[in-house]
Length: 437
Image 1 (cartoon, rainbow, N blue to C red):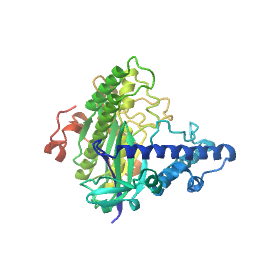
Image 2: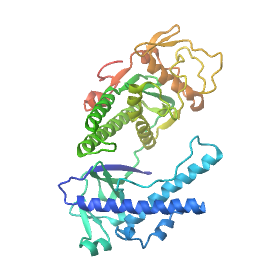
Image 3: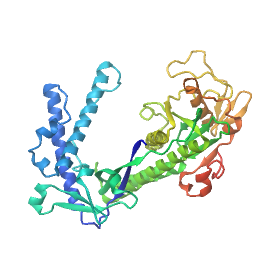
């Protein structure tokens, strides 16, 4: 059976007497990171050659910052730097060929004083439900401490853990466990059926199913939008009259709380989509996405702020990960003219930049999120867009869209991600929804 990897973060309680040790580790990791970045930049500026995977380790093996960390931890820090330079080299090749619109930038120095540390499983030991993390011989000589411990997560088997990362974020420290898990047995899915997804703001994800008993549903984004708005108001109030770059414990606390809320919303929304596909035997997920749409957003100051801060890209990537794990084909396609063309009238869908001068849709959008189609009356505008997103790839993937009914496009079920604890919503979101839209 194929293996898959998961990731779990645990907040390390400040009552533990390890915070000074964690701060020391992350400080030394940041210094070593900057050393590696300096060497990589100089190699590029002076010799115009690529940095090898092990070049930094050979160069800094006698460095004081390298020796102040456990050897395996120091190696991982420098390999992370080498990987960032490798990404730059690949982007630079594409830029030289004209495949990129923007010129890539070299990795720059860290300025916040803390960086993440990584320990492979080989360096860890489990002792009385505590994970022992070594500090290295140099720290033992300086301070008389050779290791420290953190509580092992109760829901993870220590044998499945592959590496441990110490993440500094907003004046807190997190232990991130990367673990191995068995890939679930893939169910039998219908490859001719697809779920079209149109992302938005108030309607975070609008989904239309092309299966025989397909429906339309909307994952509500108004609460996510409200949380972001409240966060911005708090930040504005706390920073009023303060110098640029001001930061405090209060700002760090509300920022971390907001980040946890967004991460929770992403996981729940992605799970709703994938569970629906598994239950309805849908074999394809077609996600409408235009590259650069955030940078080029021009919807006004307030709408731009809401659109840019809602983590739709992270939600898309989370859905992609879950689809890969469960054997669902994930397809990303550009969504140009999907909101203008009429699905029920089978309007031609041009590709962006290739619209014929004589092209004109048969219907039009009206107020309050409705679309008035020719002959078929008024339907939900976002559902019309989601159905058209399927049409963008129906020929390529051999998807049958003939079963998408007008009813699925007219009254989609609205699902709120923070009420998924109700059994009816989790088990059958299309029957236990909190309203229609």
